[in-house]
Image (cartoon, rainbow, N blue to C red; front, side):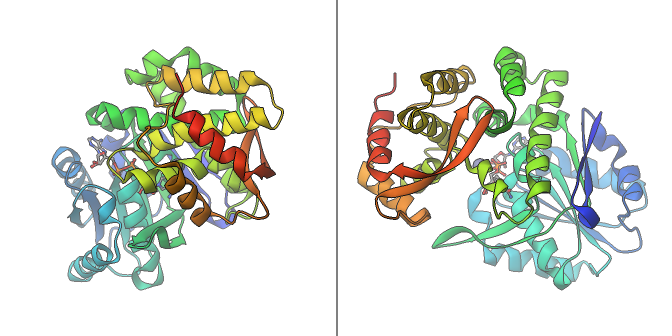
Amino acid sequence: MRELQVNLRDRSYPIYIGEGILDEIASLFEKHDIRKASPLMIVTDEHVAPVYLDRITQSLMAGGYQVASYVVAAGERSKALSVLEDIIGAALDAGLDRSSAIVALGGGVVGDLAGFVAASYMRGIRFVQIPTTILAHDSSVGGKVAVNHPKAKNIIGAFHQPELVLYDTATLRTLPEREIRAGLSEMIKHGLIWDAEFTAWLDQHAEEILALEHDKLEYGLYMGCQVKAYVVSQDEKENDLRAILNLGHTIGHALEAVAGYNELLHGEAISIGMVGSAKLAVRMGRSVRIYTETKRILAKFGLPVRLPEHLDTDRIMKAMMHDKKFKEGRTVFVLPTEIGRVEINKQVPVEWVREVVEELKREA
Ligand SMILES: NC(=O)c1ccc[n+]([C@@H]2O[C@H](COP(=O)([O-])OP(=O)(O)OC[C@H]3O[C@@H](n4cnc5c(N)ncnc54)[C@H](O)[C@@H]3O)[C@@H](O)[C@H]2O)c1
Ligand SMILES: [Zn+2]
């Protein structure tokens, strides 16, 4: 088992990562001040509940906890105010009070949703994350919690840090393969923005990681969480440094918006976006190796590096302009300067972005 600390002064918290740590859930809860006198509520989704909910509920009850649960439909659509309202109704019925905790058991959807319940119920109660996807190594660190509005994603939200995160790698074995690859896209991003050595390690161990080999997976998640935790601890509320976490996301978000949520998973969209950022970096004068290496590593993990041809370039550009202000023909992008380093570049010609989007449709 590995443990790392997210350093946020009085809101610091630990992340435990390891195979089988859910067997110790009750004692870890107790150690981190999750109260037994007040009921807690597990929020999960319909894919995760049949596999893990009973076992976790039993372990917690055996440790003296009173446990309620709420199961939402799987998928992004559950990040909605109507679902939040239903969960709060269930929390009231179950008698949750100011000393209670909300436990998110699932991927980023459940984490964001349950986290926002915890942030808003009685103006904020304790929160625990039990991530069950690889992508959630990203979403469970940093305290951003939110639901969507029909007009915009993640637009209703808060910063609410958990008391602890329990990452049991055994739960990842039931993940669909496509979700595994998509989650690894964010892990690769953490290497590309911050750590050349970790990126090389990912490259070297791609097969074992994809096969969910236990010690490799544990190390990869640990390092991914650590990069995110470090960046967030330097800049909790996204003033400056935290923006580097958006590598590949400007193009990626636009692709998600244009393709609709099923054609491209988030990790797949940002994989294409990271290739696009590398291409822009080369145009801005950086070594072509940044592009060839970024693309090669992503492809090695079975991630898409080519933009689906049928997605309309005008619509992609429009979605990007909606996402940020394109001023005087130039725009802001997170661009790699070498493998393991990025910069915030404010001088990227909008015309180049369009050309790169076109080029991405022809990637080999
Ligand atoms: N808060 C943040 O900082 C942050 C960062 C990145 C992403 N996010 C959010 O995360 C969400 C995406 O997260 P995600 O990719 O984990 O999606 P998800 O939560 O929808 O999970 C993906 C799919 O896998 C299923 N699943 C989850 N765990 C499983 C398991 N162990 N076995 C079998 N199936 C399982 C889910 O039911 C779902 O169908 C988005 O809403 C995004 O906005 C938030
Ligand atoms: Zn992301």
